[in-house]
Image (cartoon, rainbow, N blue to C red):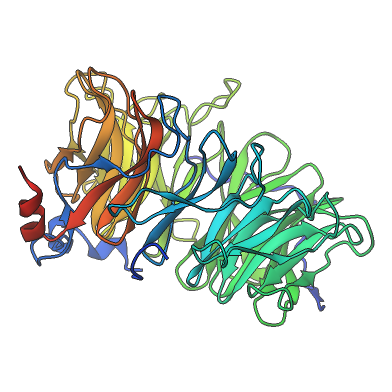
Length: 494
């Protein structure tokens, strides 16, 4: 393995501190986990499990084959919220609990066909926060408890139709952080407790009407980490209570800092491109003198940084977007880092040679990492790893042969892994697994005759796992799979 290529001396580390009602409510080290079956227990202990193929549509919001095209599903208090277009009111906020009643629109925030376009749906406590435009205040921050009366504007940060356009909604403790432009100070960091009085400017990184581009807001052990782009690119950490900000890293104007990933109690991993089109993996422990590079990666950026135990896992070594060479020996493969130079290493060369297995969809279940990879023999299939080469194995060859099933849309729900995969005769449909090799089962064939349902967005609320799928007759709408103890599942069988 090539040694890390040194970062130019233009990088500076800073040490300055700047002052300034639809339903009922409802880190272990990978080296210590070698047998996934020991961690299963959900079904065996009488816990909930997927009830076979018995998924059903729970909200045909827009009648006909076009569908309402629901966006991200978010669970709050046993209900599932999402934005959808019924063809009459435009894109608005909807909710379902999967019960006998149809999904319902929470509130027509912007009457008429245009819709308020809810986005950035974020749960904090027992309420849902989102950005919407009611046609009078412009895009501003809203909150909902699932009722029309309880769906209100949080604060009119920028009076008038332009709105403050909040972005980057991130929960830290009992406050929601976001960027917004009040029309006076430019785009800066704000936070709220969910009330107008408790909505305030947290940190002004560029005093005056000018502003920086603030990005990658990330909760980090009770603090907020973010990146500010201006004449320089700076990684900041903001203390949750005081709002004071401390710079941990600064790079030149042309650089990019991204993929902030907290691991363990005190480490934050991130990637840095100093303007050369390739990235270095860095780590910080919260102080400038404890912020340093770990390794340079040629070719495409490392991707899908995923914490597991005391390490971060990622794919690295792939060829660049424009054909720039990556790792010529291994290609794109699974890597890990424990925050040390020696501990940043290849996990396993799943597909020997320069092409690589190109792991994707990295997801943690019961102390193991699950992902899709192509070993050059089975095609792209479901794999798992405990962080060692020996413990990195094929879970199941869902679609035998070199084509593979190409698993995507991974989500973990109470000890079960849900995903979509493509097989001959069924097309792209939903699957689930408890993680045990050989135990991968199909869900209902929603789009018959080999058509693709493309299920995604799996999330649990109450006694169901909800997801978005496309049926030829209904179009793209939300669906629900009962998720109950085995005895109750048996009662659902015909």
